[in-house]
Image (cartoon, rainbow over all chains, first blue to last red):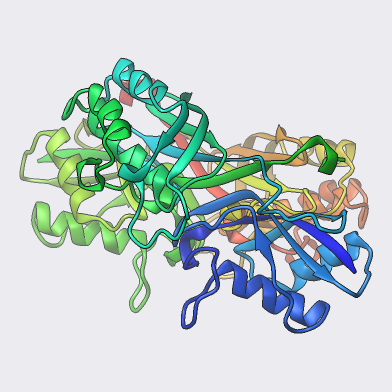
Length: 251
Length: 251
C-alpha cells in the first residue's frame, strides 16, 4: 500500500468546512471524489484539522492510502485538474506506512486576521474580520499571554464538539502586526476544540475594546463556563496555517 | 452647487464594469442609486476611467455635483452603509467648482498582476492571472520599454472603443517583481483605449514566452493592426490603481 501526503490550500468561503456531510459541499467530499476518479472509489482522506464552514486553509496536511502507486507529481497535477478552483493541492509526497496526518501531528497553527481600518479594499472582505474600532494593545497582548500552557478550554468549546477531552496545551498565542491597523492573532497548540480559536478571538477583542477586564481570560480558563466567553468571531477571518510533525516524517 | 470627489475601491468580479448599462450590474449604477438616496435622484457620477467587466479598482477618482451640502465624513459613512460590500468609498472630499475627475486627470495608472507559480493559494484566484510558465525577463523588459512615448495604440484597441483618437502618451510601462514567481506590470499613460492594457499584457506575455520576437512590439506601434496583437489577457488580473491631477486640485 502507498501512503500519500497532500498539502491543501482552500478558500473556505463556499465550503461547509472540511468534514464530509450529506447535502453540503465540503472539502473532504470534493477531495475524495477526485481521489475516487484518479485511484479507486472509496478512498478516505484524513486531515490534520477539521476546519469549520467558511474557514480557509493555507497548508492543511491530509493523507490517504491506496494500493495503486503513482508518481507524486502526476498525482498533484491530476488532482488539480479534477478539483474545483477554490481547492488546490500545493504539494504531494509519499510518507511511511502508518503515518497519519491527524494522529502524528504534534501541533497545529491557526491565524486570525483582523483589520481595524475604517474602510478597506473590498477584494479582502472575505479574508479578514473588519472591526473598525480602536483596541488597547496592552490588553490584547496580556490576555493572549495568559493562554500559554495546558488548560481546560471548555469555556471556548463550541456546541457539538466531539473531542474526548477539553484539555489542550497552547504552545504560543500572540498578536503580530501585519500593516497599519492590521494584525494577525497566531495560535499554536497540540490541538484545538471546535470553534476554540474564534471563541478566544471574540473574547480577546472584547478585552481589547475595554468591554471586560484582562483578568476575565484567567477566570475563563480556571472556571469552565461556555456562557461566560466572548462572542465567537466570524469564520472568514480564520486560516488553518500548518501542522507540525516529528522530525522522522520531515524530508 | 457642491462638487464632491470620491475615491472608490471595488472588487470587479461581480460588476459589469464601471459604465451604466441596462440589465447589467455596474459600479456607476450602484453608486448613482446610493447618491440618489443620500442627495437627490438623477445625480450623475463622472469617473477618471471606465473599467471593463471584471476589472478591479484600488483608488478610482469619481466626482459628482449636488445643490445639497453635507459634511464629507457623513457622505462617506452614509454611502458605505448604502453600497454593496464589494464597492467602498475610501475617501470623500470637496473639490473646486468645475473640477472633473475625468477631464482634469493628467494621467491614469493601471497594474496587472501575474503569477507564474505552478500552483498558488486559491484565495487569490480572482485577483491575478495564473500563468504557470517561464518567461524571459529580458524580453519582457525590452518589449515594455518600447511602449514609452506618444504612439498610435490602434493595434491594442478593443472593438467597440469610442475614443476619438487612438493616440496616447505612455509615461511609463514597467515590470515590478512582487514575490517569487510573481510580478506586476505597471502602466501610466495620459489615457487608455478600451482593453489597451490587457491587449498589451497579452502581447508582452507572448513575447516573454518566446512565441514572438521583441521587435513585434515596435511593429505593432508603427503599423496599426488589431489582428496582429497578442491575445487579450483576462480581466481579473487588472486593477485601476489611481489617477494623477494638477497640483491645484491636490490637498
